[in-house]
Length: 168
Ligand SMILES: Cc1cc2nc3c(=O)[nH]c(=O)nc-3n(C[C@H](O)[C@H](O)[C@H](O)COP(=O)(O)O)c2cc1C
Image (cartoon, rainbow, N blue to C red; front, side, top):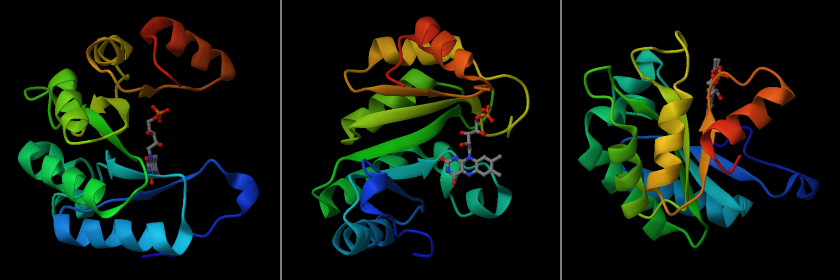
């Protein structure tokens, strides 16, 4: 599990990303990563769409159960002194797409920044990311929002920031 977690001091600021759907195991992982590696922040990956990950509610699987997602975030926040950030998608499916609702719950649970990959889980990596959704989340949150999806060139980063007002 910890393979690849080590980093060099010159790489700071750096976060270590963890994922999982068991609040206790996630708290344990956060404590371990904090103690052993001391990154600058911990990011929870709630965006991975891969079948073997989501079938146990890991990655974007927890978008099917936002209560569980909140419990995971609260458990991780309670297990580390480091800032905890969350990366997720706009929803599980087109029917349940609700980026603002999801983002507000993540913020409420203690996430200090929020990365939105503006596709649903069911889109996997197809279609296009909805940058308008990123703009609505930027508007709704007090915490910084990192927009994600369809960045292909350095110019796209500027276009994304102009379009959405996101932090990065
Ligand atoms: C093979 C693969 C592995 C990925 N692994 C991670 C990961 O470990 N953590 C993460 O936050 N995002 C991961 N991503 C998602 C990308 O970072 C990014 O959010 C996504 O591809 C959307 O951006 P795009 O529209 O520019 O492709 C992965 C994507 C791919 C295709």
